[in-house]
Image (tube, rainbow, N blue to C red):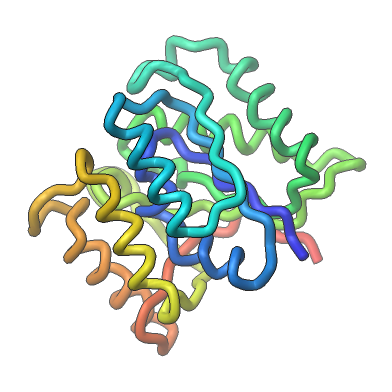
Length: 209
């Protein structure tokens, strides 16, 4: 069994980017942890817990950094927070934002994860993958997300959408990319790329067999 860590900047990023895959891990008997770096608004705290319950996440951590201000924080503190969870829970699979996201918090989290998961000799990390985040990845017109790893979420897409709906304060109306309809459409596009009904797409940072 695997110990999986999902590292994101904001509440709802974990559902948008990797919700279907996260639930698949849980259903396969893996232990799943979510580390959210920025503090939610009051409403988001309940929403975050509700989404985690739907995705069968074992534990959700929130580091309470100010939203949209990560670049003003000490970078080594962010790295240390991530390293602490990795070491304490013997994490061997990590998911995080692609560095190609428009949102600066997302970029910093990606950079911090790269440092925290660096392949030092005693590292137990075997897989590090970067996901796309609707309303951030596709808005960066200067960079293009290039997935080369796909996970079938045909069996978990319905629960992913329910978890996303739990974030009432974050959901927008279609055709906003952070709408239920768009997230489902994106899963179909990614699924068609590999011959499945629904999928989530990733860029491989590192896989060690």
